Length: 319
Image (tube, rainbow, N blue to C red; front, side, top):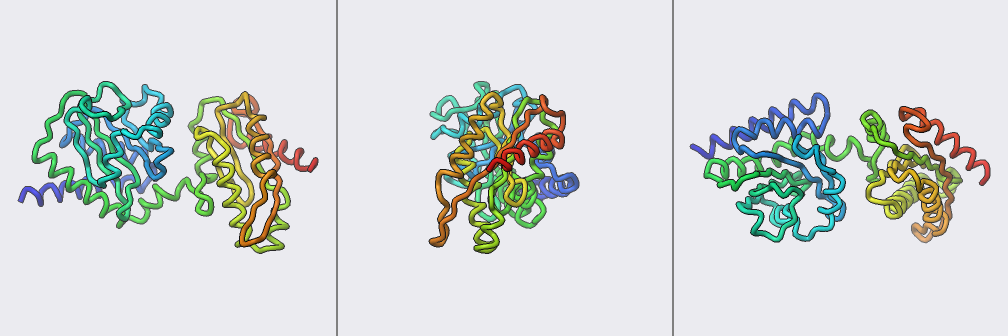
């Protein structure tokens, strides 16, 4: 009877939260609502959600108010290179994990106030998308009711999330370009709605790409775009955002504004220097880049995008 109660309880919490989040399509709001509904049962002090699809570049997709005081990007970098990060035990077992006293483990934790920890895998179709971390600032003794809640929470999250196609699209597709797996223009538009930092925007366009499509076909052209996307991602820092804006246009957002010309040269070299070989066919591309600085050159995306676009075309004329 008690197991059935917790099954219904977790199912109700997840269903309500999922329906609410689909109205505004916000990952951050989804997890904040989910945490609010789970707090009365699990009574945690702080929480975070870590995206772990790429183990070398983990990323927070949502954090509780407590973590707003920390440099989240700095924590991400440290977690990306930690073999003994707490979330790894969840990845390996695909089961929720409770650690009563984190000081007795070798694990690196992002906050020295954490005494006890619970990690819950967020599964879609048996694949771990992320880990929901629950932090306790005093030693937490986990009771039977809480363990039953966690069992059912994990199972129901996987089942309900798989049933809601829109929710999977929310996590996987809203900000992702389907061809290259880079961020898309939807991401960049929302980024500049909230960004207050000084950043550089580099607008890039491949040279003579149309002739490649005309000669070899659009399927071949798509493969070329995927190679270019991978090279751009590999040559830039993990803190730089690489966006496929559309067609053969790419945008890079960087905080390393003072070295923007160095970044542009790096981009040009990685594209021009090495041939692209697909199915025995070899092509060599160039790339033209223009840049603009926010907020120096403009106070919104469209202003700086226009300036970067003009500078890019001035360079393209020289090619």
